[in-house]
Amino acid sequence: MQPRLSVDITRRLDHLTLRMQFQVEAEILVLFGPSGAGKTQTLQAIAGLMTPDEGMISLGDTVLFRRRQGETPINLPPRRRRVGYVFQHYALFPHMTALENVAFPLGNSAQARRRAYELLDRMHLAHLAQRKPHELSGGQQQRVAIARALATDSPVILFDESFSALDQPVRDRLHADLRALQAERGLIVIYVTHNLDDAFAVGRRIAIVREGQIEQIGPLAEVCRYPANVRVARVLGMANLITAQVIGIDLDRVWLDWQGWRIAAALPPQPPALGATVTAFIRPEEIWLVYPDRPLTRFADHNLLPGRIVEQWPGRRLFQLRIAVGEIMLEIAHPYTAYADLGITAGNEVQISFHPESVVIVPAASHATHDLRSHPPDHIRHAGISG
Amino acid sequence: MNWPAFWLSLQVTAFATFFIFVIGLPIALLLARTAFPGQIVVETLLMLPLILPPSVIGYYLLLALGRGSPIVEWFQIRILFSWPAAVVAAVVVGLPLMIQSSKAALANVDPRLEQAARTLGASELRIITRITLPLARRGIVAGIVLGGARALGEFGATLMVTGNIPGRTQTLPVAIYDAVQAQRYADANLMVLVMTAVAFVGLWWVRQLERPRPVPVATQITTQEETDATALVR
Image (cartoon, rainbow over all chains, first blue to last red; front, side):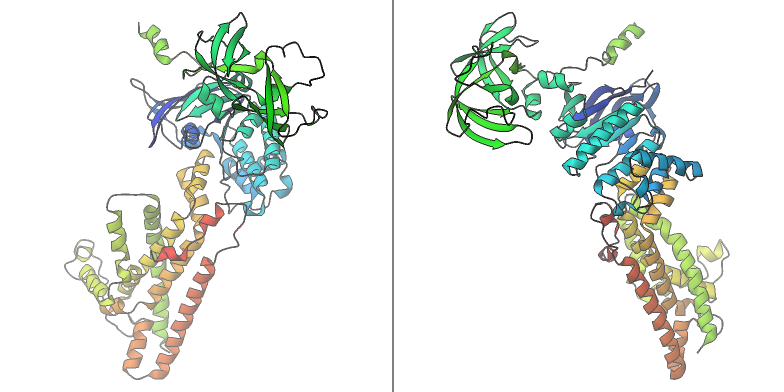
């Protein structure tokens, strides 16, 4: 069976208390959150560079760290954990060549050098093996650092804002490489970032970290579809957050009063109370402009609203519009050629429409959605044994 | 030219430099890598020989090496008024320079590199020998050269603890003093020239070592590893 990295730690820091509980299998888990939320400290605890106050970290059957009441404390030193760690500023040894850097965890034998060379080759750097770090570009240095982390033969590799100093195209390529590498070797990867684009580029599972705790953890698509609360929606960069009042609930619809308009929204997993004020968001890509001379689609009769174009600008992938609907500005993103015939100019009056499924109601109360795969809390397990 | 004094100076300097290195490096490592209560007091005491008048150092050494001191009474080490006493004096005055320079260089080694080495399975000893010392190499060598040059030029304390016995404990700086006193200026000129040349070469070498290497643009870490000369006189 694939080993599983299990983390359950507490640590008081200067400005917050770190409380982390999650599991990672052979996959890429993104720890996403603002700077200073405790992401780096979590990685350091796993690697053994920082000691938690309490808790347990284990990899498969091996306990890396344990400090709990009534149990023998265990704290393996970093060198015996051999958890691969890729630092933000590469941390390559400047006095060694690329090859010597990669061979460092392997020793001095000829076989070590051969293996190091293979790993460099895997990272497409065999031709630069004899270069010193300062003779390499940032992207190349980071590849050396990844090869060096792989050389530890650890099933776990931690990326601490590893690519944030690199240019976007280099970063894109490294992300693709990282995904391939993970799949090829069945690695357990934790990828820390405060950059939303990076999070989406590598992660299939994401943990939203805020003030030392995980707000929500789950598959990326699911977290985006159902943010646990408004804060998660905000850090995920959800545009078009609106507040509206619940005026009716159906089998599969919630009817909202938004600025006097009646709009339909998807029924969320936890239905809101009738009359409650809720926060919802509408994805910018899922708002359509309506051609006045063309038949409406099935759903457009529900959520059909008048608006006025305020601003328009070309985006990286989609064309961006800002449209005033009543008092509120909505962002819209659409393919470049979608509305070629419509004459989109600032000041024009248009009609917009969106599917009810595109209106997602966010639970108001802050309650973390726990990882479905996590174990039940430990006191429950122990209760059965001691009783 | 007073050849016996020249050779004795070389001998004393060689021994002194060895001890300066062997004693100074562990102290520098300790001071750069750990924090302990009273560290400032210890550091200040270690730096004291830099500013104390040589006669004060000489007097302390007379007390330490003379009759009644534990070194003589318990360990039976009697070196006063022999050439090893000159070595002791040279070590005492050269050590602060070695410690200052090495400590600054060791403290400048990015701790993240050591952390990285730890995650790569290296023991603390391997980290010191493969990462820390090689990266601080230039500051350490500079410290050895500075300490050795200071040892070569040691005069006042040496005069007091060796007794200035020509041919047996008279080092070059002391011989120069004697030559001037005796108005043997030809002798003095030559010896002064030799001393100046040695000092010049030593300092020039240190400056070469301290000259920043071309700073690579891509790495932020390597820029921090340069030995900052100003840190020496902090």
